[in-house]
Each structure stands twice: as structure tokens, then as C-alpha cells.
Image 1 (cartoon, helix red, strand yellow):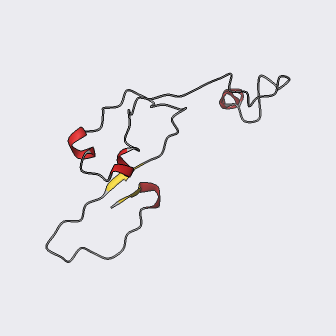
Image 2 (tube, rainbow, N blue to C red):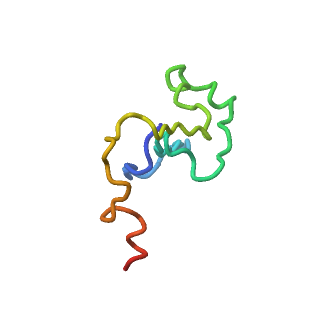
Length: 91
């Protein structure tokens, strides 16, 4: 079973003879990159996944960010006091 741990829901107790297993993943967009250096996926475990799923298990330390992405207007404000994390320092 592969699902986000943020939507994990308990069902019924495991009354069977076999242990239940789950791989919990969380999403972090590639532009954000990891918050700290992340260990690589174990290649032998990734190789057991379907080919379409393996594509999702790339380099965990990837960061794709283009500040000149063309999606910002030339006259946009440089600061946003209402949503800037620094607002907590002003309290």
C-alpha cells in the first residue's frame, strides 16, 4: 500500500497471521528541495516497483528553482507584509 500519511485512516484491527505493511510518503515540490540532505532511495527496493512508479523515485536532493521563470510581473512588490514569515517578528 502506498498513500500519504496525512490521509491515513484506521480501519479494523489486524486479526490475520500476516503483518500489514505501508510505505508512507509526503509530498514536497521539487522547487522547494529537501530541508536537509536526504539519503538516496535504496535502488534494489525501487527496482521492485512498477516502472511507472519508479519514475517518482528520482534523486531526493533535487531542487528545481528558476527565479526568472517569467511568471512574475515586472512591477510586483518585493515584499508582502501580510503573508511574509517575518510578520511574526513584528508581534
